[in-house]
Amino acid sequence: MKTQKSWRKRVNGLLFAVMIIVLLFLMWSNVFYNSQTRESIKNENATTVKVWESYVQKRLDSMYEHVFELLLTVYNNAELASGTPQMEYMTRKKCLDQMTNKLHINSDADCFFLIDTESDMSLFSANPAISVSSTAALKKSFRDVGMNRTTKLYNRLWDIESVEGEAYFVKSIALGKYVAGAMSKVQRYDLAENFRVQGKDSSCLLVSWDERKVLYHGETPDWEEWLSFDDRGRATSRSHTTYIMELSFTNDNISIVLATQQNSLLSNGVNTTTAVIILIVSLTCAALLIILAYNLNHMVVAPTRELLVANHEIISGNMNYQITTEAGSEEFGVLYESFNKMASQIVNLRIESYDRLLREQENRLLLLRAQIKPHFFLNAITTVSNMTYQNRLEDIRSYLKYLSKFVRYMLNSQRNWVSLKEEISHIENYIEMQTLRFPGSIISHIYCDDDVSETQIPVLILFTLVENTFKHAMSLYEPLELTISCHRFETEGFVGCRLTVDDNGEGFSEEFLKDVYKKAEEPTPKDHFGLSNVRYTLQLTYARNDLLHLSNNPDGGAHAEVWIPDWEVDKQ
Image 1 (tube, one colour):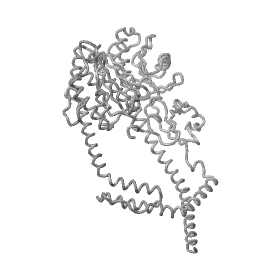
Image 2 (cartoon, helix red, strand yellow):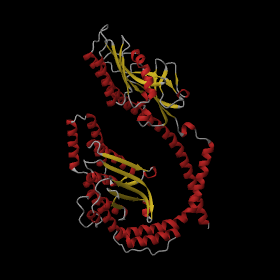
Image 3 (tube, one colour):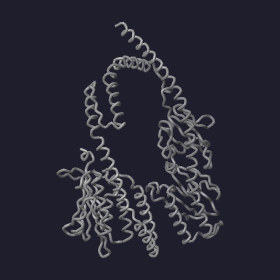
């Protein structure tokens, strides 16, 4: 008993000493960590601000080039000297069209403008993506803002002006009696929104030192509570750590102020109550460790060691090994029993898993080969070529946009699963391509309930049905009517989502409806290779062969259904 008591005293003393050392270490490490963290945050934010400046300057330089090109058009088509006649109507139209085109190319610009300083003539074009109120505000004030501070032609520096409470980058260039420029909302370039800033509650402000005022404060309406200007006009703050850098792309003395709120144990202070609580918790943990030591050894360590030995035997190839020792607890007894059952089945499971993986990979390759075919891209090129002869320039742009989305999705189809709404978005893009290819020949309807839009389905399953419809039901003599619907469905033995595709074509032949349900080892119908792959994919994925249903509608046309079971229900 004495030995046991002495042992306990020694352990308690050691644990107490350890807790004190740990507590002191935590206090020291907190001071050191906060010091290093603040320095690291400062350095990382300084780098971020420099990258942001280069990022903004590059985008503003792009808008400057557009303004330069607009002035070049004015130079080539109008008289610039004072007292010369006003710009002709065709020149004005050409400039206005050019501004509109530039807005489609450069989404950063909120508006472009051209002003005749000797008359009331002015041209204005706003970005269609901005709100109506913003458009009205810019249209009302662009003339005053544009003529307020004009620069020379090769001056790439920008100004910041306020329009009804919103800060805008403004570039206004004078050439003869004309002034051309662009305006872009500063909020588009907000550092905190476009870059990852270190620290808590970061804020980004643009400050004019000459005027001692904040030109832009982003989403920080209470900046006046923590930011003030000293006698030299510099920003100071007690509650925030600030980093200031003068901007190189503005005409005035404007700087960016990046502020992060101080948030650390050191800045908030470590009070006595917290220290006492930490000490009490440490001592309590020490006592519990002594009590738990024996129980852990008897009920956890020894049984775990036995499991490790058994696992080593299995890894070594002794698949007949069984645990025969008595477990120290009911839980480990269950684990022992489960391990023994697992050992007896592991060989079959490994073979079955490997075989299933191979079949899934082969099926995926077959499905992708059925989808990505060279003739599709040749048809796309032929379609674009035909449109050029028909002078369908806008249709060509639209078709190439849809084609790029299509290729991007197909190249990313190595994923096994996608959400239903992603697949439908891909199908809608595909239908738009076919509509441009065969104008007036496609009528489509897509219905998808909100409660199934996030359902995960095997990639390209629904798209394969739609592509099969276009391949076999498309006719140049009458429009193709395509209906796609997705909704929840429950029946005996099934709970999940039902995807249906209907068309008004000739439907499936009786011979095909018999052949499509052949076993995987038998030859696949060549005319509907995609549908056969759909069936195999569903069978391998869900281990069920009743998830694809093909038939003909009473009024004519093919009807295809794919059932996607709830994954949790299928696992059970």
